[in-house]
Amino acid sequence: MRTTIIETKDRDGESVELFGWVHGRRDHGKIIFIDLRDRSGMVQVVFTPHQKEIYAQAEKLRGEWVVRLSGKVTARPEKMVNAEIPTGKVEVHPEALEILAEAQTPPFPLDTDGYDTDEELRLKYRYLDLRRSRLQRNLKLRSEFIDRARQFLFKKDFLEIETPILTESTPEGSRDFVVPSRLHPGKFFALPQSPQQYKQLLMVAGVERYFQIARCFRDEDLRADRGFEHTQIDLEMSFVNQADVMAMDEEMITTVVESMGFKIKQKPFPVFSYQEAMAKFGADKFDLRTEEDKKNGTLAYAWVKDFPFFEKDGGGGWTFTHNPFSLSQPEHVDWLMKGKNIDQIITTQYDLVCNGFEVGGGSIRAHRSDHLQAVFKVMGYTDERIEKNFGHMLEAFRYGAPPHGGIAHGVERNLMTLAGESYLREVQAFPQTSSGRTAIMSAPSALEKDQLKELHLKVSE
Ligand code: ASP
Image (cartoon, rainbow, N blue to C red; front, top):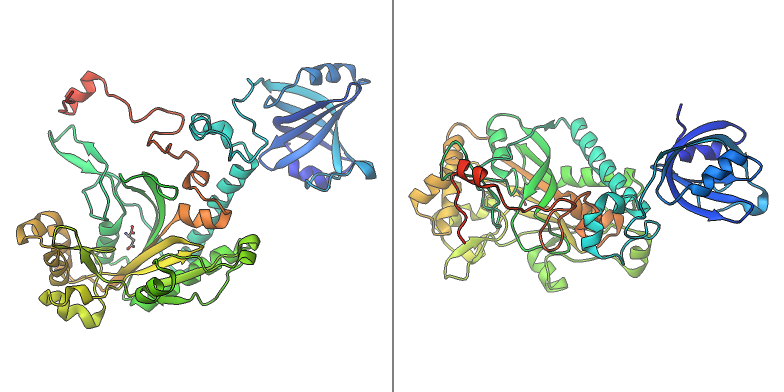
């Protein structure tokens, strides 16, 4: 029976039953206005003293109280129309009012954009912070973005497959979060920095087209566009080359964001080599928008490719620049295998840049065990260490692995470009604080002695 508030705009003359929060209350002595809010929007409710009982109740109402209200939708007099809100041509004349929950005064105002409110306070009361229209919009945008990506990938015959969260460390250039094992004393799981190895194993398994809305965990220094947890739209395909993956991905992004009403600056996306990008922008991520584009919310995508595979690691050795599971460009496989001209080996990595953020990245992978071994050899790994850390991949590749490649999109960074936000926390429901604690709850926290014992752990003083 419920009518959502946005629907009232087309219900002139009808009786409706509304549920929601008191957003604001203006008492003009002989008349009380309530702005009633639900997930769909806001509408004005008018209480007049000739309805004695309801008026008395309305006098008690305060901000954020939860009510059920039935009443009649009525067109506002011409000069009372509020062009600022979608329901501005109507108002509701109440017939019954029930208070479902009273509310304490929120610790900060909810009718602002919230940028000025202290971050710790916002995250401590995130469930209130999220009531803001800006954050409601961001949550909606995120859900829609993921939904449309998913629908696109289903149409292209991808399977959505979940991979483990309790897993073994995969190097993605960051520190792992680890989980102690109760059953195996002194042993630890690592949370995935990405599903990289499992998605490749799914290619060995013959899946051919995989995707996942994947949670990734990286214990790294927090920044505006980095948190301990982020979500990826992660995909992998078999029997493809670099151009195939880039084309599929570009079609996905274009389809998704255009169907959401966004404008893309240039199609097909311009492509820069790493060298060109560095020469032109001094960085491998850059913003191609003009001031005008910025005002219009235009999205300026560009690809960057031809990155060096390796860079000096600071200790005189080599390390990977992007992803150790990548293959070099085909013409450099010979150098890779011989460990020759290491500084000149170009990887198959491609990064997608948008409005100054790196919003995606992927590569064609080594699908032969000798190629993968060669990558780790360049980085100075001994045969034993390669076997110990990646023996499972080498073994899998010996059972007929298809050539494959893929890409992952950081959901938050994509959302930041869509929503025009500068901080990751604005597009995640429950982000960590910048000091690395959870919103609302106070993790990380101490464990009880019994729990530590069960996990075979001792905390040193
Ligand atoms: N696993 C990579 C990452 O998290 C993405 C990829 O190469 O598919 O950056």
